[in-house]
Image 1: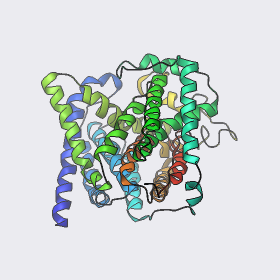
Image 2: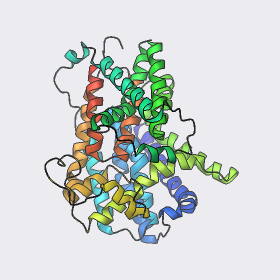
Image 3: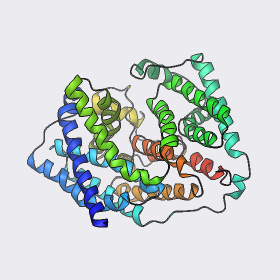
Image 4: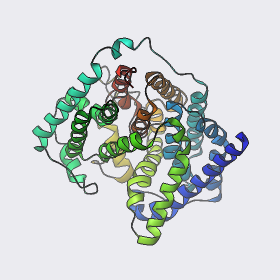
Length: 419
């Protein structure tokens, strides 16, 4: 039975890689060639692309049947980042072999350490659970969003999911205090989880207020992730009961890719590909090499634009995200933030590639400890939220600015006896 399940999943991995290749070859590289999505494969690059997937498939299969929050997040990272990156390797014969080897090492360390590292529990969280910390935090975040929306947008409600770039450009001109900006970013990821929590506790009026505040938050920056997390939090709560569901992630993603292909073939439109594969899969996958190509010949940053910016000066006067946007498409207004391998390499090079996946897994195992005793209906939105953070943001930003540490504290503060 186990062998049959393993073969079934292995077939899914092969199918998913094939569909990623097809979507890139026939949709992404055609529609977005102006964004430097090249299409120049050769036999060697295609072989290496498939070889990496095949070599790491046993680890992916082993993780797939682990019903833990950390493993579920890694499943999403594999599907949204690892396999699309392998696709990019296949279609870019110009990629340097050092980059390919380092990418393989990064994912090998991440997958292996996640399999064997146990969950991490920090002390006794009963004290936090006996306080009203989670309620106070939610109130503070809601007031923050309402204040920002009033002050900077006049309570703007954004209904258009496609034409958002004018709003985003405007949002960059807001000169709000740093601490207020941090609270606003925390809201992006904590409020959807709070929404589900209060629905479960049958506090429907509070949940409705939180839902409206999330929608108000979307009107501030028009970040699509905000509205998607609102939708996915409700979807996960009402239709996904436990972590066993994540074993089916690969088949859901296969369906998503196939739907995008059918849409393009039948209707000659690309809404599914634009909102999923292009933005979530292939832009981050492309940026890995953009960062590698630049920092393989320039000085590493060593966190001098993040952790250590108050103690030492970065050699880069411009924000590295904007600098990489210029390196990628020649546009200094394009912020090319990226996470996972990118963050590891541009901060510490080869050493970062070895150490950063271990640190990432430690954080995931702390999350495992933070959700002990919580009903599994809460976990789907945490999986999606944390995965999006890790794919799209540098690790230091994910920990502090994007709110992973506040999220861990928030989860520890939720009352177990009521759920």
